[in-house]
Length: 449
Ligand code: SF4
Ligand code: SF4
Image 1 (tube, rainbow, N blue to C red):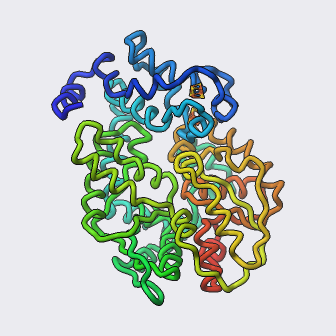
Image 2: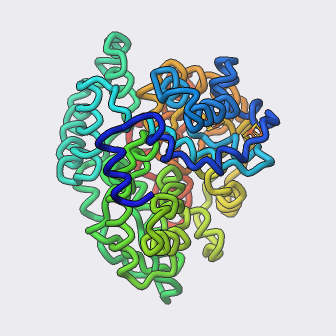
């Protein structure tokens, strides 16, 4: 679609013009075989065809053909999807479900029938907060103070969090926010330990930076330990993954362009990230520029360099860690790593390479935990029901540590472990590797998280 067309659509949205935003060829790949249905967590919970991948594709096709409008019913079924992409793994016809779901949501967001209050909230979150590091930093500083005063503990103890609905859910999902000063320790250039083998970029993440500053520092230490000089450009911005998942496509395109300029301006062997949800979006930046060959080529060059941290470390071969971690450890696959990027063996290989670890597989490790970006905030009941299916499997492993590789999954599983009263800790794979290299227990073990 040409730029002018896009402006026209934004100015005068109708069902027929909006349908142009969905790639019909991708939707038409569906042969209605139904192989994806048993893998879909929302179909499993609700038992409704329209809450299955096949049903959602049917709704998209109906809009494409003008038989239906992108109305409230459309929104309900599109936004109940977790975008876990388990259906993509199962699909023998190669339907790129994640991409078409993002397009379908963009269609809905262009129709303009959200309430002014909802639009204001979305603008605040997606334009006023996520791409603005100064504001995010200030907000997380306030949250850090809130936790230091133990208001969150009081809310949980008095069960007031349950009365506060979504706000209460958000308040209790929050991990222990690290000291805000910690994020200043992330340098723009971190030298390799010993001989430099690679020069890699590091995507620090808009929310990862203040919320998981400790995981970011662990990531950079592990990269440096493995001969990587790590470049973390200060000019990078939010990756736009949450925007894309919410149909806020225009802003996502602007953020993508900025990141492409910043990282392609450096000589890098790879661009590494420790957040699976963001990584999947960054690898697919090319999908954002279907009608701009020059920018699409640059976006594909950028995406071709993107690696999840576990994928990159497994590919270059890690220096054997020396400190033993005598713990029973299991692993839960982040959907955007396993289904979105096809990375499942590498995190397990890395965990098994750590001396002392007794690794145990979790049943249904490939089933979504219900986190899915902001899903646990916007769809709290469904998210909780999906987590309820996961937790008995987590408990059955009798692991002391549950490892995963995505911030949303860390938050969701920590909440699940805490609510189930399980004697387990949840941490990122790189925290365990860092522990095995340095011998220093991770922050998340030392802090009350
Ligand atoms: S992405 Fe996940 S929730 Fe959405 S339709 Fe596919 S399997 Fe179901
Ligand atoms: S598995 Fe693929 S082709 Fe079959 S119904 Fe699901 S999306 Fe359609």
